[in-house]
Each structure stands twice: as C-alpha cells, then as structure tokens.
Image (cartoon, rainbow, N blue to C red):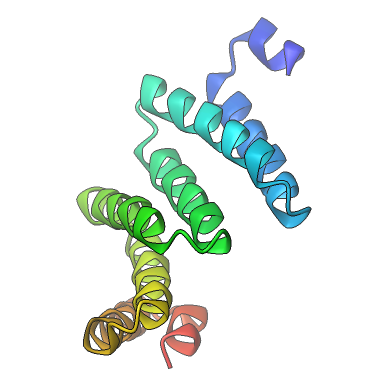
Length: 137
C-alpha cells in the first residue's frame, strides 16, 4: 500500500483495500472486512469513482447479509443499485437486483423478491449477460 500511496494511485489503492476486504470476508473475519471496505469506499468517494462506490457498498451489504443483519444489507444494496443505475452500469445493476432478490427472499418479502429477480433477468437478457440471467432464474 505504501508504494501506491507514494505514487498517488488512489484508484488502485482503493481496489487493493477492497480486495483485502474480500479476503477477510471469505475468511469470516467480518470486522476486518468492514474496515477495509469502508476505507475503499472512502477513497472511491474522494476520487469520484462511482463504480467503485457501488462495488464497495455492495460488498458492505454482503457482510451484513452474512451476519444476518438483513435490514442493514438492504440499505447498502439499495445504494449500490441506485449508483449502478445512475452511471448506466447495467451489469452491476443486474447483480444488485439479484442481491436484493436474495435479500427479500430471506425477509420473506416474496413479491418484492420476485420483482427484483424478474428485473435482474430482464437486465441480463438486455445486455446478454448469461450469469445475470442464470442467477435471476
């Protein structure tokens, strides 16, 4: 990280912090994962990396989902989806719709879950992204 700071590559520093957060998440160390995702989110905001903001918000949502804190996850997934829509990133929007579908399924909001999955499916078909289509089925 020191080298990235030294050369002033804030974008890569943010992505690296996010990657470290992912590693901690996979290890089940949610506290450290949140710390690194928060740092990555802060950098993304500072440099105007809207795609990075969406990614980091979704990752924070994933942590709260893993912890069973679904109402908190809903907030972060919703923000990530909103940003994806604002910047026109259909691929990311499809993934966030799937996240929201999964979350609403856990919350037993079956109608909302189906709406999210159907919207994800439509986005996946629109951009011909088989993984989004598959996840929406």
